[in-house]
Length: 224
Image 1 (cartoon, one colour):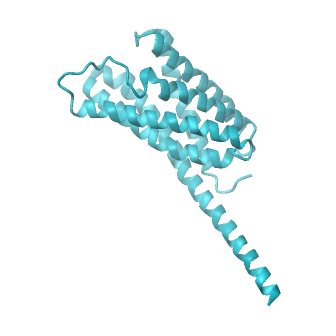
Image 2 (image 1 turned 90 degrees about the horizontal axis):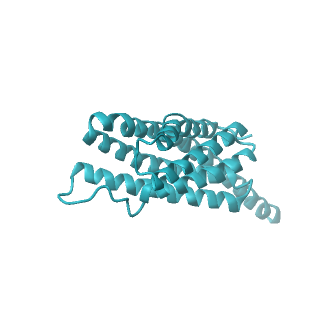
Image 3 (image 1 turned 90 degrees about the vertical axis):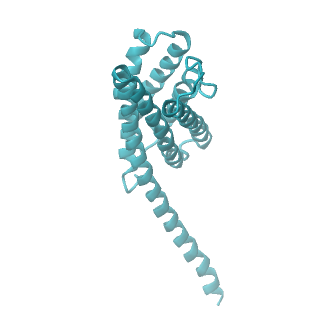
């Protein structure tokens, strides 16, 4: 009887561990799909912001606001999965990077939702040139997001689950996001090359590639 009593908790613990691993793998696959969709949403945001808004302003604003909102929602799942993977490297830094990322994602959701609401039902009297109170000149969506990507990329370069090249790409994305935020803060002319060049590189190439790369890693069923 004593042997049975001792063995039963061990079996229960083993079953719980296997269930936990299966649940983690399932969420990784979900987050991987979210990362890929987030990369696509970021690309479509850039297309709507840079191309469609020039030829059809109302449609462009509606679309890029929608993609900004959706991208923020999708990124929250990616950040949870990254924390799950990267906490073994450094739990405090992983928590800090993810906390900054969640703040940036929430800023994207609110900013996109605010612009979308104005695009669908334009207010009678409103100065839309004023910066957003929640995300002024992209403070969260570019500035804080850049810091988050930098921290997470540093952890990725030290973590065996991810290729180091993905971390190095993240460094470039982080620097570009910070440059875009500073440019939007001090240069109000959106056609200035100091804003246009980093925005085009980041929106059409670097940022989608980083998120899709993370998604492909998370979609792997087994971890190293």
